[in-house]
View: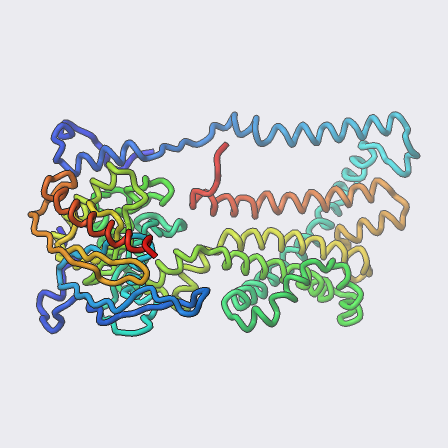
Length: 299
Length: 262
């Protein structure tokens, strides 16, 4: 990384040369950071989880060989793999995934659009906070499955009911994340902003929102986890031929068909999608924000 | 070099002070009723003047600065300033989500400088604090001294007539602080800015100021004033600076001792 014009030349011997002195101080105190080499990333970040997955597969296979239980209760890894291949060859594998992921992401985006202004309102307006703040954080501990029966009665067995359940699960997390993000904004930033003339809406936009971004992102991450969980609960409980087969229905179908490989396949896919979305969208976003602020500690 | 900061005050003579503090008192609710923190402070800062407010802990010097900055209201008395003052804190208070340059641009934007001019002005201000080329640096990539210089550039970006400084160099190491004293004196002389500088460091006060105002503690009252006519640029180790510092320190210690007597 190029340093900031810090060429310390011969004029340092002149103790009165302020510019040279300052350049020297700057050069001495500036921390140089380098990117981690690819090999190190592989050994430290990719290898450990790969080993863990491999270990689970090995233990699983050993349990099957040892016949600890009947094969219809614990299918061999190869049986699950066959299920994957079959679904892939029939072209239904991606359909299952896409049905659920598109619902989940659309529901999450709606939750984002509702939860963000709601969170800002609760964080910034005292009356609103006193009125609905406690309810909002209480709602977070209510399992979203509880919303499925009323949602079915209100809206019937259709997509709107799924979205309603997602919203009820995810909006409180997103709003609460933003509220705690705003609460954690250092008062010094607010004072500095006010002396610069950032008051009212300008203060909110230029100071409060960017300062609260790390907390907000943590809320979004949790909001996605809640969206996904709520959706799976809704899909498992409320299956109907009109709804199309998502991962939740696949799981439920596996149970009714007494097909343990299909059940395993569904659970694996639900898990993988949840992890993939987090790994592909939220983690990079979070790390980018933290790295920009120098908050990401390199070990 | 300082053309970006050219003062409008040069042409107008309608205001003869950068800040006028008249009979200001401030009290806060305490455990035993209202606690008086500042008692009847009257102080003028002339245009282009450098005044340091000196006092031990609890003298309310930061409170007074907050009042002048308009972040809080006095319980009694009045404060008028020539425009909104700029304020620098002990912590750099730079926004970590912006680069050094963008921090300065934000101050320009909030002041209403059009977008097309902001970049050049920000670069100019960085050059003034001798941080040319640091525009794209993140705050955490800068050293403590560099951060305070960017904070100074951001405060200058407000183009205020008055710069309020709340112990801005207290957290820096001695060598860096020394350099920043030189830097601040140079910039003050180049821009004819008025400065009200709060510190508890007697030598720093004498090194920088044209006038040193000593506050007594609990409640804060103006105890005494000294005019410092040692020619600039001074050094903190100058004999004249040391001599006056000894005198002021004696008085300061006397003020502090009074609190142990009852």
